[in-house]
Amino acid sequence: MGELLFVGLGLGGVDDLSARALTALRGCDQVFGEFYTSHLIDSTPEDLERAIGRKVHRLCRKEVEEDETVLEAAKRGRVAFVTAGDTMAATTHVDLRIRAMEEGIPTQLFHGVSIFTACASALGLQPYKFGRTVTIPFPEPGYTPLSPYENIYENWARGLHTLVLLDIREEEGRYMTANQAVQWLLDAERAKGMGMITARTLICAAARVGSRTEKVAAGYPDRMLAEDMGPPLHAVVLPGKLHFIEAYALVRFAGAPEEIADQNL
Image (cartoon, rainbow, N blue to C red):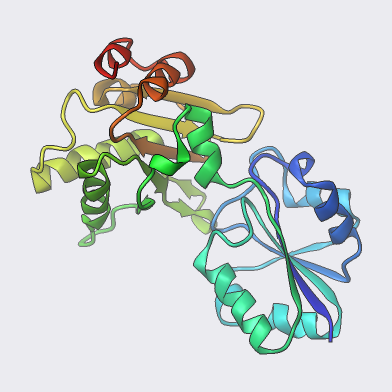
């Protein structure tokens, strides 16, 4: 019986890999990776291949969720499954580990920096004050779910921040921008009318978190609709009740209006 290693690559690039993870990857017989849930900002799969001296077999969603490709390889040798961010952040990765353990395949985890903590850090917000994470999907003809707005509202009503992840269509080369997310929130507010998104609602955006070109911004909807956050990947945060240090951090780190610091004294 072989072994299956789950390796989180972090957010920026190959340079962010821990020494332990790098050593482990160089000792593997095969390396598989999925980059449809997220991808590295500063590196490509080819960069990773050069760093570890192994080919990275890129998998589509079906191959991760339904096929036995990874598990069959792990029965015969030491195999790694690599992803951007942290290795167990996606449900499908947890499911793959469960299936491996049910097959009697030993597993190891090599954690990487995740958007779930790095985005809060970049903005100066406290991670323990976040509620449920939400994803906004691209609207489709006849399909515009409002459940993301409702989940954000639940957090907001409790004074909690919300990390809003934005839809990625890797196979189509489509990545939702922070501007599109702000427009989605305004449209959802018009549909729901619950008073969460107004002209004075503070909205934060973060782009390419963990990379050399990381950018954060915070402001009211009119500014955030026009803010150029640059290339993907983007994320949005809807703050709840701010501690005064968080308010000052948003002013200094993200260019939020100075008045929010006075409002949260």
